[in-house]
Length: 260
Image 1 (tube, rainbow, N blue to C red):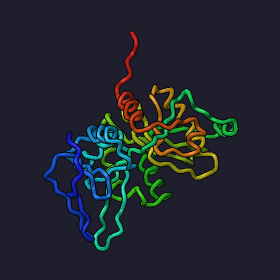
Image 2: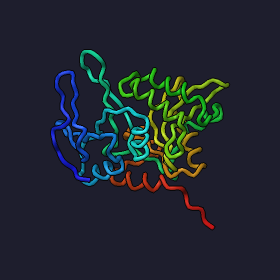
Image 3: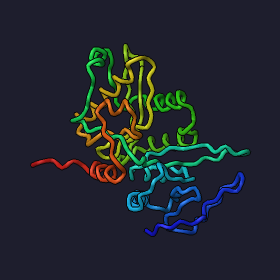
Image 4: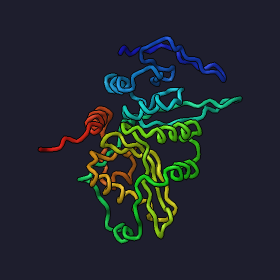
């Protein structure tokens, strides 16, 4: 696929114009790759690596579930943004790839001594109360990136239940009450975190430890934690660049080979 930089994606006041007749990957005037639904997200990922693209995200306008599903399957962490224009709201889709990605390989898991005494107080529930956890994340953090159109699309992808890329959740309960949860995507043997919350101290840390244990025991290749942060490094995560992430992500998408 040819990579060209042309000003076919333009902002004129409250109007966004895009020339849909072109088949190649395009850049916006701001330097962001524009992804059209007809583009192949896998090839866009290859272009990001080959051109040493130095932005954290690309831009798209289409919230069609099939399109976003393909973005997720290609390794993008899909976010959104509401533009501050007057009149009807305009939403951008922002497929993130992160120049540096935080990844937990389970042999590096560092649970920490201080959290051990809390673990037995909670029960991990896998893929239960997904809708509640999704809505709670939106409630806690607002619609800065988890916009209404994106929420609706994620729900549709969840309902479709395609095993190639599934919306998934983890929650920890104490005395039968949900105290912390997160949602993300499962692509092959890779789990990617999107957002999480906690409603009491230490519950979030417990949820991370119990989730990591479950993923490890189920044979997942690694846990994609997205943007690097100090608490993730303390948890045992390491930072990888886009090229390395794409390599291990594509390997992780493949089913595990069972020995004879």
